[in-house]
Length: 150
Image (tube, rainbow, N blue to C red; front, side):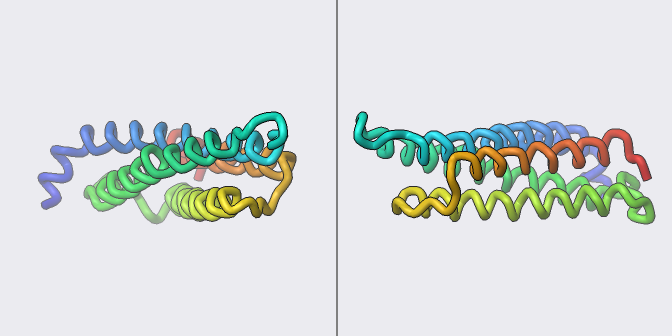
């Protein structure tokens, strides 16, 4: 099995990076849709139906599948012999940030449902601030993987 993983490693890593990019695109865009959702004047026209559809489709067709592929490829790379030295600190920090990103993903899913029910928990400003969370997590993850500072 380890020979198979080693030979497929460049392809798994490529698919992993593609999935991460797709996941991050969705994670950065969905909170912005939440801002539009809570700040749109419902008396002007009925944009909530459109926004709710966009939010649902973005989550179900892009973000969820991309996260699943990211996790599968990431775990396959973890189990590829000789790739990660777990005595270093960076893999642990990276793993923690990926878990936090996944938790944020779950939070976004919950927020989408609350918005669809007309019960947003945050204001536009709150969702703008939430929009920064995946950016910070992504920066830490990339630095851990590329620079491996410790």
